[in-house]
Image (cartoon, rainbow, N blue to C red; front, top):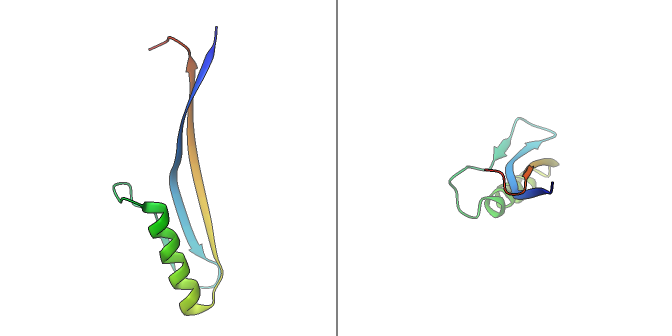
Length: 68
């Protein structure tokens, strides 16, 4: 039997400032969501000089080839 994989890419992302309570996340129905999140991160870093950590998660489904 063959196993197939289907990748969905980044399904969630969360940014959190290491120095204050600022945070941001991607919104499910937002177009260009990773670019917009990066823009929000850059704006916070430029405004405050703080360091922001970005965490992302991606998803892959594994199943038998030909299975429903």
